[in-house]
Image 1 (cartoon, rainbow, N blue to C red):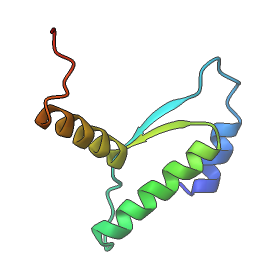
Image 2: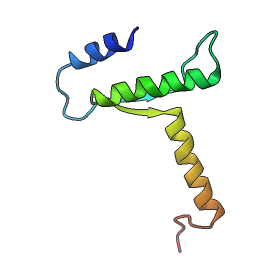
Image 3: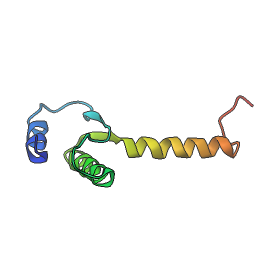
Length: 81
């Protein structure tokens, strides 16, 4: 499905009280490098975000996990003390 068709479909949905939330793992592609696949995944997520959809990509999850791991390594966890 082309991005423009997906955006048209999403824009035709009735207004929701809360924004639509989607998880966007990396796309499975053939004959493209991993870098291009990641680029297209991020481009699609950006287009959806501009259309009002809250998108969580694999890249965003990896960044969040990296920050949490750094906090744990530095002893900045939210312990019970």
